[in-house]
Image (cartoon, rainbow, N blue to C red):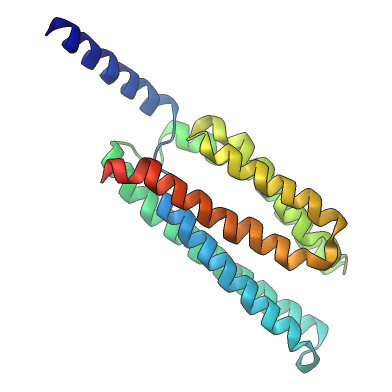
Length: 201
């Protein structure tokens, strides 16, 4: 009995240490939804590009930006809601010190990548925008992985590799973007859900 109590005590200590050093509020379902939103957005962009003769260049760019902002808003909103819900079951806050460090690591890569993407779009150097997005996002995930589940690092590597491939296959930019932000997120989200979320349910 004493050995069992000692094991339980050690498990409790380990759980407390993990909660204090890791952000455990990331939701697998949010990854799935982010992937779905990305695929829907990619389909919408593909449709608009096929109708490009109906719009001038700046109108088309404006519509694509609106689609991108809508996808981003849906992804961030869904992630925030589901992560807050999961945080409650983990006894954490999505605004704790570890979470803030994780988000800082994310944004230190995402903001320059976003600025570069916008600059490339405004200067008509659009061929590598998806490559830039994939590369900087992949680097952001790898960097932030030390503050949360290690699985996110593998998602980062996959997206980083896709970004490298896209640099040499710009004709398939939308396909690479769809696989990276859509398919990879859905697979990652499903793995996270069955590996972690269901245990907390």
